[in-house]
Length: 273
Image 1: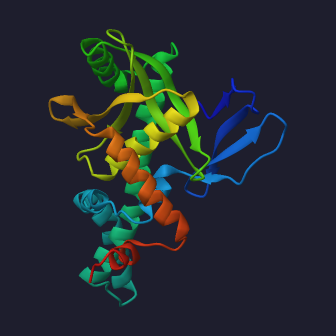
Image 2: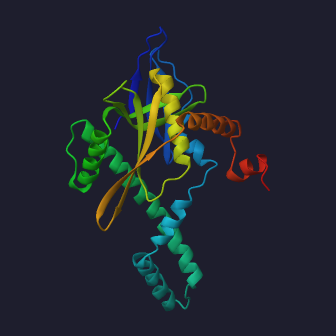
């Protein structure tokens, strides 16, 4: 996984390096020019989108994980409470369980997705794939071969100086037939594909075109899921990529001009109740 990438400009301007750095629970993007000057660290695409678009799938997923191991922990609390004369109500147990579960499940989901991304990136750099992820890597390579694509860049940080936003795309491939066009590929380990992913791809395409001075011809979301039969790969073609770029720019400009923007504020300002 590439945490820094150096851009060498051919038009006489200063080259610069983009680095992805930890910032709170997420990342920001630091730019350092060849003369040593820097700009204010930029928020990520996902951070900007997350200010106004909720993630409904995360809530349901956490609720489904409310299983016996968490209730067992709370049961011990209840037994202890009996000794002291106090018995937590079912409502209190639900609340405590939910808080513990939320913290654990957010970490679990982030870690699994991050691990898969790191393994895929490492596999294209000659690394040995752990057995845990071997089938996913094979599926990805088979999909690329079947669709005539060769990987060109992996996990490269990019920025939009105009918007002041950064991001890291997963895979930039090139078609091995015809006019060798660029194809943007986003990897998701998720049960559902949400509309905000369309905006993310629009944002990454916009930044790629600015940084590499070449149009992105197509984009795909490759969704990895798993059931009792093992892992599955579903490819989602991101139609109308140009419109996704336009919608991303419009949304980002609004959000960044309203630092405290929230879903309710946005809904109200565009004519909601």
